Length: 368
Image 1 (tube, helix red, strand yellow):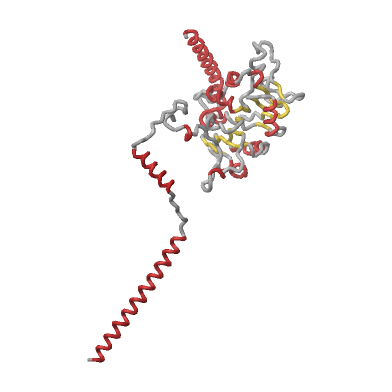
Image 2 (cartoon, helix red, strand yellow):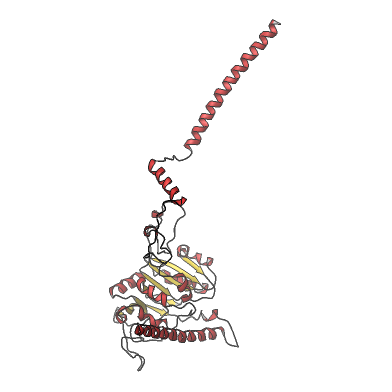
């Protein structure tokens, strides 16, 4: 019996010893685990100021003691916001998904270059883009729906691509180039895809536009290449010209289009101030822009001084009828015939609308 008693006694002591050791080991492991978990997360400090700010936001969100705000000078729709939080303009700057927002842009483009393109003209556009520095943000409007193939060009990977099939550049411009979207850019180029740029340099062009105070401009066109107007023909003896002589009877006033205050719609360049006005004049349903060139003068004053052609940086209009191929054959007519007919009809409609609007304004002011 005594032996058995000692056996039980020793066993009890042994169990107590094991339990104690196990408890100590578990405690040490727990402390170590907690330590390593703790250092694996960033330290969080919650200061008194942050606590007060948190409570302030809770109060603001609870509906009590909310400051009533109404600022009529804010942009339309933002009257209920404090002015300091309102951002009325945007841009096409590409942003990172990480890091500090203030460090996203090492260099912000100062100008916007847009082309309305089809993939067939990719080599021509590639040659054109190379004439512009990294001060220019590139934006391509794709009328044929083909965008990913353009990544064969390195510059395309940092360009903005907008794709809607069978639309014109003025349709795109009205919908994607709102003045508040392009307000970050000093000048906006809205160019066709069939322009030869061998004798053109983007930076030099901007220098001349600024030097001569041009708010609306275009490069001179090489003579004898699809020219329609004398005003846009390149002159080899000067940097810029702002007027010309046309056929007898074409100009009722030497300061009016097409003898002055006139550029064509194939390769116009606008200052952001001029573009804000021009954008509002573009009609939603008139997509070809015919007649717009004669009305641009309404957006700058004096127009015959601020609209001109840059002769020493000139281009060639290659006259590639790509737009006509986007039409549809109807009533036995070729697709391009339908497109051309609509162009002429839109020109007539635009002139009528502008004349009616002007007459309505004059009548209203007389009544007032």
